[in-house]
Image (cartoon, rainbow over all chains, first blue to last red; front, side, top):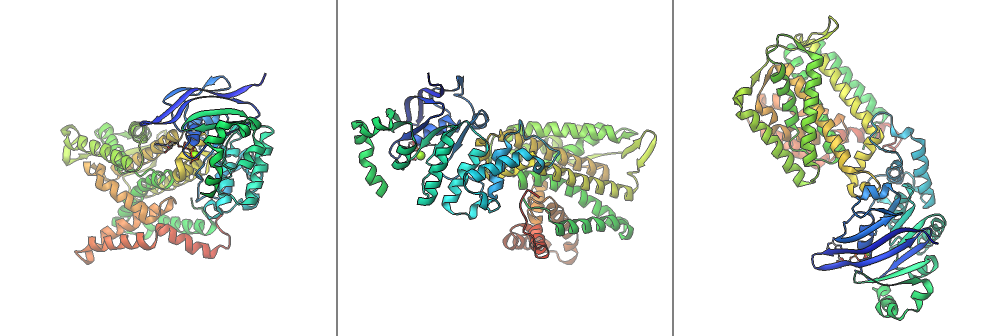
Length: 254
Length: 327
Ligand SMILES: Nc1ncnc2c1ncn2[C@@H]1O[C@H](COP(=O)(O)OP(=O)(O)OP(=O)(O)O)[C@@H](O)[C@H]1O
Ligand SMILES: [Mg+2]
């Protein structure tokens, strides 16, 4: 029987009168890549924000490995092994790549309320930060100031910072958005590599990437789950065609 | 954060040497003045921990300076013999507690709201002392004696001797600088500096940022209390003006002028502002205008303050690029 690592039950989030998340009940299997598709404004980012503690749900429940994490704050969520990357690049622009990853890596300490020994003596943190950079192909950019890098590289750093916390479950919000073809391929390869050990929840507009990576796909429209199924099922679903895939060309053009 | 490069260390050592030698040549008046400036520098360095490293612009930091000073005077002012160790411990713990309470309420907010809340708290403390006849009211409060620094029965430092007092304060200044450098290099400091850059992201990486901000606030408040303690011991006279928003504003100005996020910048800023305040009036009655012009000039043309200027000069001497926080 497959193990469910994360589960949402009747999850709702209202912004005023708008139902950004509307009664979403999903199960995410350990070790699988579960993609979430949907047109702009479908509520994908809102769902990730709920799962990562950035937003508190209006109603419903979230459980991780059987523990209720509905009311947990972002720092708690990160500490129990759920990492997230942001759709809108969210890095420390004035810091070097290494320093950006350092902050992620240092959260492996039980607490960073340590005041005496210099942080640079922490070998384990060093290794983790460098490992995350290497995974994302940024080893050569280690000492470059993040804000001076290309957009695509900043997107890679966004993922590297999350990886530095060594999460078990990764919430990726459009990791490929705005990347060039080559970078996009690199990151797709990285995601495939990560998927061998970790669980991924992937929001992505790049259909080729989604269809090649995902084990399961959920399509969302107007905050609600439209359909969940295997890649084949979703490809052939008439409802999905109408709601989303039909507009795909327009969206890509837009 | 700026790395302390080798030329900067040389610069700091030269500054320290100057301060060490100053009482030998300086008159009694100037020794007293520099003592006062060094006490204020301890205060502004502590404010730099908040503004320059944690991203918390406190407009009420003088409250803790004043609380430190008042605590010493109120609790110990009437005693014949003031035990330095006890009075210091008690003053600092109580100031730290005050900072914990104020900080606990303030760090929930950010930006302009944080500024307003810290200001409001400081004004509350100000009026508390201003309106309580028991603590001297607006006249302030006198202290009869200075704390006695004894170890066993031997007197270590005689605070009634102005040279002793000078070196005593200098030792504290160096101690506070080294202490803050240490915690900023430690894991704690790395988190603070990151919070200043992007708190939301640091939170998402697993840090309870409010706790880190609170601890920083308490450390800064306690050090401000230390400066107040020293000031009360130095002048033996405390007035509510110590806690006023004017003092808090001047401190922010000194930090920005000197260069925030550098620790030594605020010391330079304090020296410049106090010396200008003392000497400009001798030359012209419009000195406040000139002072304003100097500040505008620095903010416009030296965005990182005097310390930023020193860094750019020192970088010409060192071929190595500053490698960032690691060093
Ligand atoms: N903080 C907020 N306050 C009010 N409304 C919000 C907020 N965040 C999102 N919304 C609204 O909720 C809806 C869903 O937004 P969301 O960002 O989750 O969509 P998305 O599926 O991620 O879209 P995209 O593909 O453009 O990233 C949108 O209509 C958006 O305007
Ligand atoms: Mg989105």
